[in-house]
Image (tube, rainbow, N blue to C red; front, top):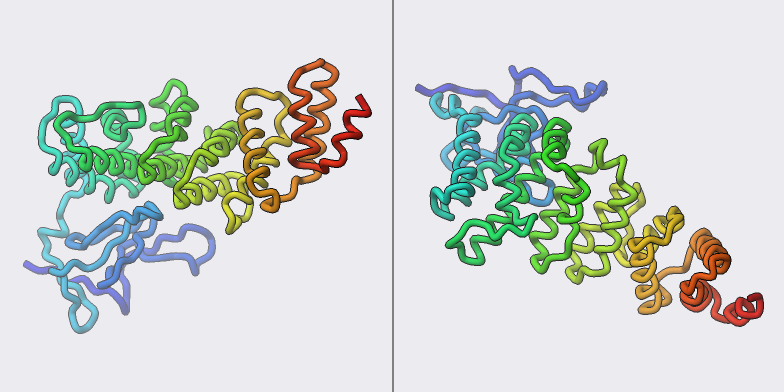
Length: 356
């Protein structure tokens, strides 16, 4: 038995209105075409469509499959048994399969990858994202975030793909999903330790970008906003260690989202600007502050024309010099060098010595 669904013309689906502006309303029932289209929040996807997860935006996209040909009048013929396909039951089965594979080695890598791909396609839906958070532990283990060796008998290619796919699932489940974020953060006794693992330098740049995607998905959580200054510093310290330009750009986009700064075409110049603003707010010269200051120094010495030190930053260096002088701290010499030779006017170095 076939059921005829009409798309275009008159729509019988009710509307979803994300804000008071009626022009922003869209049909609850997703209207497919032969091209990939983004599935908006809350939309119901008819059965029988091709579905994928856009890796760059972490949004679900769908289109007509090769088996679903458009009718001449714009109608789409979808079999009733496909429409009754229980996606939620399939997701639960896929998550259980992942858990059994991790805990007991049940299954093979090829099947695991298919299950992970299906979960990644479903997890961007808010309800399914929350369901996925019930299986945080096996996904964390597969992601390799905590130096897990992962399942045995995997070749390097399968192992890398499994880590990347598990990481994508975590990021897409958390994106714009407050309940999933809450469940996720509750799992960790010390979420900042988790952030340390997310921002650790690894050789696999693709996987590192996927991990940064998790952090990007947590930007709007209350927990994150309460700790954004510490997290920004960790990200800024990571930046100079990166060589891959795509990874550096991804990192700076996340930092820009946090600070609200307009993105700069030159990642290094944007890093220098945000690093200065971050240091200005630092009162204690802890290890993180000194490390960030040292990286900023290296960048300036490597390309003196890249950026000009902000006046507020120079004043911050002056205040630090006064405090170090009063405490007779040996770091005073280094800070004098930074203030005048690196970031300021080298000719003022002599005058600084005369004033001692």
